[in-house]
Image (cartoon, rainbow, N blue to C red; front, top):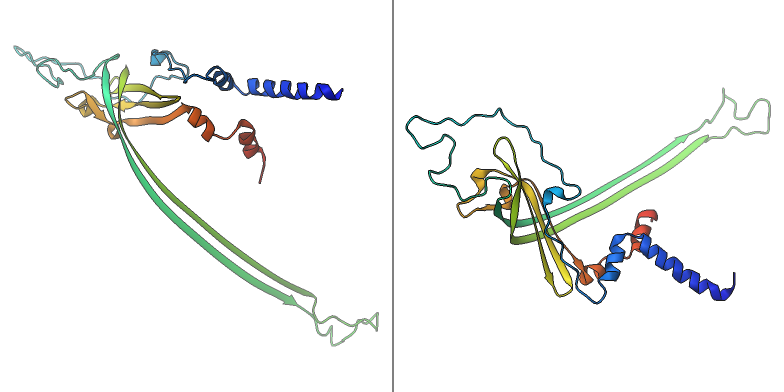
Amino acid sequence: MPIRQRPQRVVLAALTAALLSGCSAVDRFADIGSPPSLSAIENPTTQAGYRPVHMPMPDPMPAAYNPNSLWRSGSRAFFKDQRAHQVGDILTVKVKITDKATIDNETKRSRKSEEEAGVNDLLGLSKVPIFKKVQIPGTLISTDSTATTEGKGSVNRSEDLQTNVAAVVTQVLPNGNMVIEGRQEIRVNFELRELVVGGIVRPEDIEADNTIVSTKIAQARIAYGGRGQITDVQQPRYGQQVLDIILPW
């Protein structure tokens, strides 16, 4: 291969590797000189990976009406309830995560053993009968082993996240509980922050102002992150990530 063709092949191989690394690399090339684009508002139930929730349900209880009464059993209010109760309704989730954990472990272990076995005389003889000049060894086996193990580990984690996000009711379970999912995107300059909230809520836990605290969401799925130039700089390159997985040291 001519020497002058090698740089061209190297550049071509680098571009090919960048394209094969995934659609994210192509998107990053498209975002050069411009902020990351916001995602389109779409139906959460039509997104790839969406799965309806199936939970154990009690036997359904039909609504019963008392004679000459406008009150229905199981109703939460006499007038129309403005809180979310059916598919497509919106409620506000108050995300409040305050987590702090401190763990410190230390382990030490040490063991030392010595073993020695020997024969001074064999049937009263100090030499081997066949070979008169061979002296019977006083020590046949001698072992000495030492093992020492020391381990230390510590975890110091502190997380604090407080924000609000509107979620949509995507499914109503037979027992009245609702499956919600919400997504919020905020773009500041060239950085896009994303907040995703999902889970199962009880109608009784929804406040009068149509809000619910994230601690009352069952099977809660809360993700907070971002993408853009700052996040891109903080992440290791694709080659470094591959080496971190392959290299055993």
